[in-house]
Image (cartoon, rainbow, N blue to C red; front, top):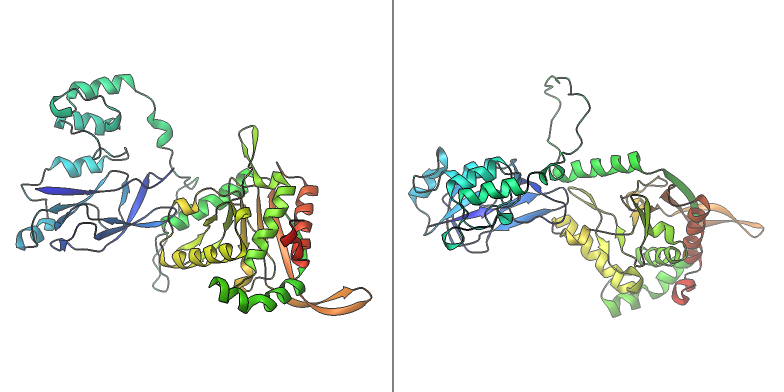
Length: 414
């Protein structure tokens, strides 16, 4: 008896993944729920666990292969590891392994046929050739089996829903000219996450009327407040008090006053969001990811700092889930942690605003009639001018500045 390992559901709007690496080799013994293979999507890296105990007898999709949801990754044979299963991957699957299974996988941009009712060979071929979802076919055969007639009937009844699903990722307008190999160069295939980042950033530039406004904020008071309560805060809450929680609080207050920056354009409508899910850009080995602080206006300083710390750790370990990075109404990016003094952040579609924080640096500023050295930070707000007017953008940034320079405002919600 064999058990198939298939690509699981990958999350909303994600239909394909790349096999990053196998954690087991053919012939290895596996336990139920043991991680077998890592898949890389354009959002996260996830592990696929063994659906049953046994021996990994076949790897159907090698590292680097692109696989659709429901596609066959490999096969687990019942029993302990031995010489027979180990020989299987050298050329063809063993005689006992059903040959049509890998063939169905090769045709599989369609969603999972594996999780659907059992189909006859003829019905399976019709569904694979015409990209018919087996889950949508009315089965009339014995024990819920899909017959050839069922597949033909489904094909006649539903001829046209597939084209929108198969929308390809944007490709270069013209093929690239051949590039000669250079021993002093290294060519590495872009990860799915990096490709997705490039696609979304270009999409933001192509679709939004993006504009950036700047201001600077005096960090003196918030740094003094942090210094005063840092030890007590950490002792009580078990987490360090950073500056990000102040900026999250300041932004949520400003978003309540300027709702257009917390909205998005949907066709010819503006969708105003009466909740505040703040994305916090986090660097990871694979690229920049943006996990979401849900209902940030309802979180305390300790909750915000704790969640951001958890996001950073899981991002470095590649353990962020799709749900944690889906949605978001506004984004904060802190390039200052890398030493950036000034930048123009790019929108995170379909959001209409993103705040860029930068390095705190002492500069000479005029205070009253005196020139003093103060810890100053440049702030940048990039916004979609189609929905946000300049007056609103400047007002938003001024409100953030006021809250940081007088942090008591955050406690009094003014």
